Image (cartoon, rainbow, N blue to C red; front, side, top):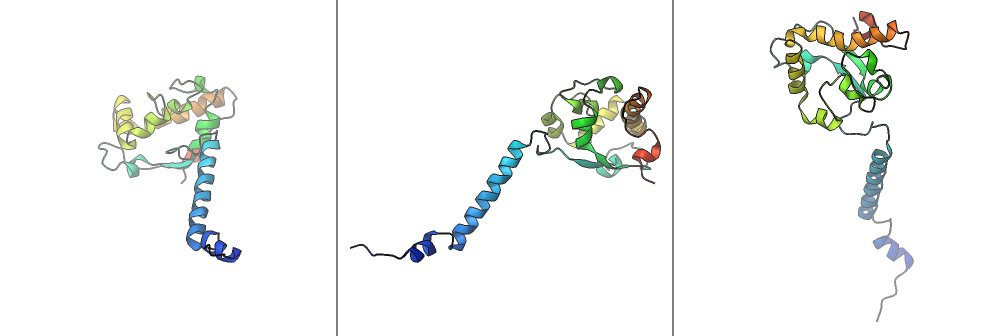
Length: 173
């Protein structure tokens, strides 16, 4: 009535010896491990759209934005994650843009209330609006220096650990 099969026959068909099944199980394990890592990351680094290190070069990123000054000095290797998660916490009094300590992103992304709000709008559109409020794209350098360098200088004056206050600190030659 029933065919008696050996254990090797059963494992050969249903076990890990089957390449298709092994591939599916391996993919599933890797997928679940990745999901667990994303869920367990409490520092926000696994959040979609949150870059750890970025280069700031608006002219290269948004070439269609009219009225930008010629690109002379960009910022390479800006540690975005460290600013958002470490440097800006408890430092709102040094910033020109007031922000609440639980959402430090507003220090550099004015007028936003959540990371989701920042990532919804295309970068060039968001920056165009910010620069329009700052007097237009021609004021790019002034805007960035007031925002970034202003905070660094205020922290430096207060004898707090601060970012660079000299040109070479942010701009490579």
